[in-house]
Amino acid sequence: MRLIVSPKEAVQKIDALIKEGYELRECIVDDYERKRNEAWEREDEDNDDESENETENEDQHQKIAPEFESFMPSIKFAQKELERVKKMAESYQPHIELNKKDVSDEIIDGYKKKQDTWFNSCLTILKDIYKDFAPIYIFYERLSLTKFDIGLGDPNFREYIHVVDRIDSRLSALVDFYNDLKDQVRSPLNYLEKKAQIWFYDFVCQLTPSSNESALCGYMFQYGIGEYRSYADIYEYIFGEIEDTSDKLPKGWKVKVRSAYDGINRKTNKSFGFNILSKKGYAIALHFPSRLIGSGL
Image 1: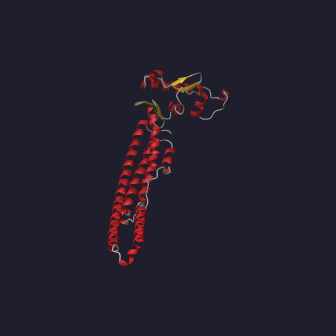
Image 2: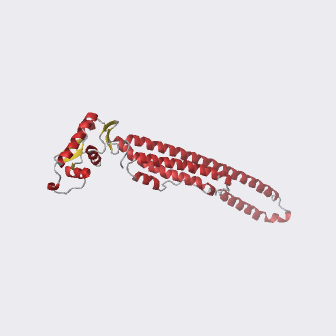
Image 3: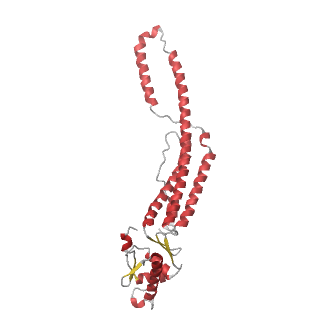
């Protein structure tokens, strides 16, 4: 995907977006867990009150009338069975009855607004980073890849989860962009077509926008270092479609390609200390000196 800014600047901008989105997500999750725990505590208190009432009722039935003493073995067996079933029931987590005030519309609407603000900020910055529309479409349409555990008995908390889920889906897209860009940061040569700038790490070689030189760079940086492209393909890219046979090519067409080639190398040699293009017959390729590769740059 083609960039408007340098890969280093793009990585920094996307890293900031990821940090902002993560902090918003954690704020919502912390609030969700705090309210959920408060609801569980209320449920436990209610269960304790019910248990005390049951204990009082059991104490009242502990005294057995004389006429029922013959049934004591059966009664004791029934009590043991009741205790066993009760323990089994306690091992199952009941649904929580939550109060609507725990998750007010104002709270959820506030988080949604914060999420929308972050989302729109992401779109704006992605448009400033990428020349292509594809990243914006991927970010906008990215389906949720992370499902936040809503747990049993949390029906009133679902809106929290929906907001978190939407943030997670967009974060996953940003992380993909970041991983792609960090590889470009390690690449020594990059070309910003919109600005007509060749970058060698933090060094910049400025070309004239809308010139043959900038058009040649725009074409050559679509291919890898050492991947040769013919003069005819280059001319067709810069000046428009031509016939495939050499006798149909305009007079002086090779001179125009060679002139752009020489102009780029002259400027990069001045800015970086080396030529970025090499020639083999009537073909041109991006070039990176082996002495720089060997130096670990």
